Image 1 (cartoon, rainbow, N blue to C red):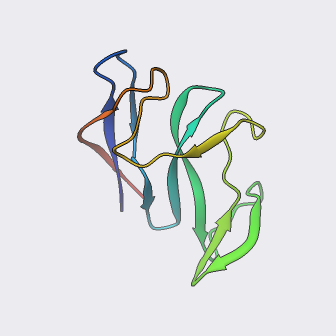
Image 2: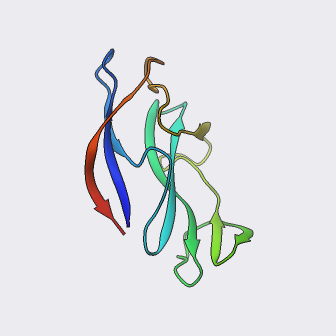
Image 3: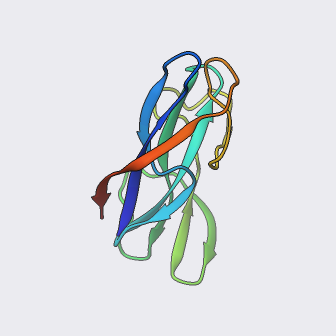
Length: 108
């Protein structure tokens, strides 16, 4: 079961609910990314357990144990520039350190 946390920037006030790095539920694994074009943090699907892939997923053709790797991309536009974001890390809006609050929800 995966967990999401509230991350906030004390300087600019940006706040978001994400896992803060790699995380896994029952069917898929996620990675938090920083999209440079959207200036947002988001959790995106990075891998699915074999048998749970969906038709709209772009698989890389690679696998790790029983996981099929998914092409990571911004959920708004697949052509956006992004990088993996792992807490503690910087705010996508102002570049200052983000603070992690308590976990906000569990997900599968």
